[in-house]
Length: 395
Image (tube, one colour):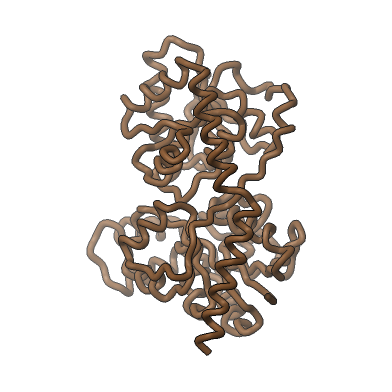
């Protein structure tokens, strides 16, 4: 196969968003069998889309990148106003289009490049349904495009403009069975050329042989790792944590890893380490009592699999079907739907270290059995081969 385009709204080593990280991981995985060309913007910040990287060609870890500048940054206040109106009030189709323009990123150069160069590429892979790069770009090449939706039950997905997008798409790559079931149920999508694939987890066990601890870490703690944002359930987590510590007779702390988009409680039992290296992340994970994943909106959680591989169980938001599905299939974690259940899960984990180890072992086995890099590469190769054979037969 010749050139394959990966289209995503942001791309870079500093970009730690879910869909963006998935795109980079798959691009690097497939680059030795395909001529992968990433088509993306110059933005780093997903809130403003302000240009950060230089426009033009770039290369990261051997993958060729074409960056296109964003015409103008997002007006965050206006966008928030549109969201309040669109999600909770009757509105017109044109207002949904206006919302998508405000959502962005507004990058007409990238869209023109797709339109004028579509014959140079055998396949296009669009990462996440939610942004303008997919909404405006995918319909131009729908006959040879896969969508990796990274979709979940959230207000934007019920906008009517996305029904057409999902029905135009010829191929889908899902992260979990729950994501596929949700999209089939809501949009009756055509899944003839689809598979549940996900992504692999890069983990070097030797990093755990170093017994050094981060000097900022307390001796007894639970961990949250990821973007510290309200959309990730962190504000609710902070509220639950403060309530838990009122009655708890222990020295347990909450350690946070990741960049923060919201204020973090100023408490002695809440420690924010900021952004850390992968090696340090795994070491901090391995010494935690458990990982807590409070997000309501996920299409696949890599961080809970990283926790299992680090030897620690997880507690997740039970209102997220994807997270509870990962825990049910693996027997690697517990889930809660309210504060009382959160407290009960946490106390159970703290009560028996042997059970915690067995849960982590089950999760680790599940991760290795289902998210092996070679297995995922073969799924991409098989699915793309079937898709291209179908396209040639139709011509």
